[in-house]
Length: 111
Image (tube, rainbow, N blue to C red):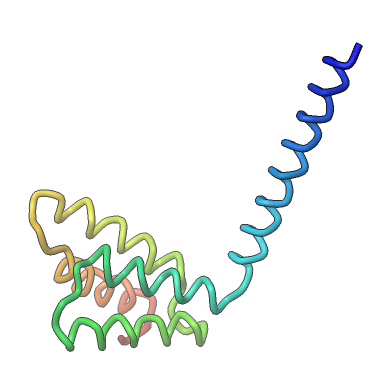
């Protein structure tokens, strides 16, 4: 008699924990500052930035995204493209920078 009760309790506890984790993750993603910080890490590490000029370019891109001047989806899409393009290379940053400047220029934005 107690086995079904114990499994039901375990199931409900698992569901409650899953909902709590989901709410916590969604609320963290909705915070603009958290998105920018995550994007900063993603760009710096994913593009393997190493020179001061590269960090300055990333900082400018982040500032423009934060201001709403540069669409976030444009940055993310260009990031993914540069990573795939440079798959056989060790250094994707130049692909990202050039492609982002070109794509932004097409929509009238100068970085």
